[in-house]
Image 1 (tube, rainbow, N blue to C red):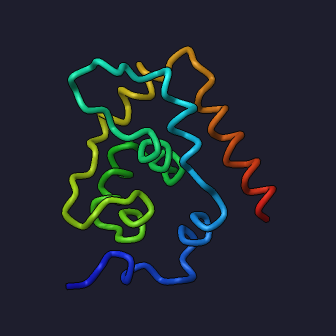
Image 2: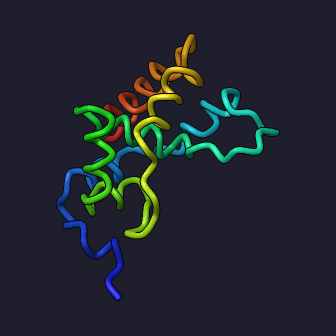
Image 3: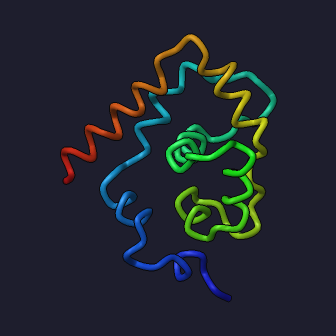
Length: 119
């Protein structure tokens, strides 16, 4: 059986980014925006912001790209069989959960700080 890890070239841009940026800071930064008693499972905030990090096209097109792009799946820690979040999930998080907050700026600043620090 082939592992997803083996399918992404060693010199791929997302591997370089992953070596330089620790995205784990996103969880504590967004914790106050998630309800602990909500019975619905929310998309992992690290995955959500990594998707936003990748995305330059429409949310629908981005989700289609993630479905077929092995490097994107590797970057998001999704297996080849994991379901990709739908575009409306991404959109609703941006419009509702993160509305009237500066969390996107905080996370962007955190990524830039790490990129500068780590070269």
